[in-house]
Image 1: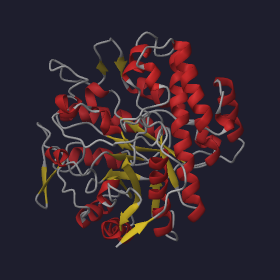
Image 2: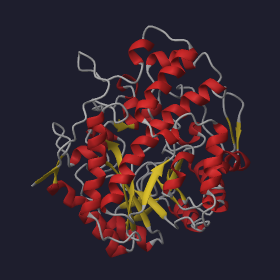
Image 3: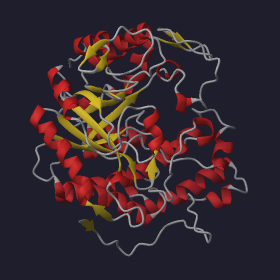
Length: 447
């Protein structure tokens, strides 16, 4: 059985005669633009797409908005500690070479049971919408495939585990689409349109969440929350990349460019939030930070939804010899240590982590809960380094009074079947358990 929603009368935005979508001003950018023209192009596009309240916001205006949101009563962060489960992670099977899962949506009951038995209370389900959506008609949902998500939510209820459903791949948006198959060796079927540029794709994105809001209305927030989209990032064009490389990443041009891109995500997020609340006004909603779950989003403070950070800092440690990160790290990258000094001479230690995450500290005082929904170190990083890094990272998160979740439970970033060389594994019902890491996580599981 399928569920179908009719589109509105809006037409696709920015479609060329050849049928290829392009971002605001990209056609002109291919011929070269000055920095003034580039920002003018982006701002002009934003003027047609964004609510007036979000236009022309300089740093002072955004700061005032954040302070005004701070007039609300301070909040406590959700005490969620757990893992990401991947059974609906991607319809592209190449990922199963690196993660021990079957892309069939059959979340394992043992995972829920063991997570509960070890004292954790949270799972995030990063999912690919194409498992339950007709890719030729993005508003047609195959309910039989959604029943597997229903089952995961019921398992959460059975074992006292909060379930956070997340669109890791959403219509017109997926962080994986920026990867180069020639380098990673992983085939990714990329989105054909952009949720930021195409009105029908935005309709399809909102429809995903209004469908879930209707389907799960009445399930308490203690059991279920919605994570709008994993690591949102409005991708730059080749011409924009050329222009940006002529600027310091922190000069006024680069900052304003990033802000205009961020506002495009704000527009998309608000559309989904409004769609959810129209059917389930009290539903607990989470947004990843921008870009890529790195920084808080002040322009969404007034919605009071949870803001989510992901931490893989420093990446030369967390992604050491990671197969899909080959483009970022040369083959001669040294074996990481903790603390770590990178090739640019930057030193990463507990103090550096505390400084990096400091912008998140003030959000709860402004009525905005925070959570760290992804973290972890890949299997090639030595176990003693992983334990030292986790201890300092989780210590900093303890100071922020926030919960957290490892990227996966079973697999290279988790505590079962990591295949991490040098680890003294313990047999656990046919799985290989990293008991020292489990013990550390349990010690640091506090607000």
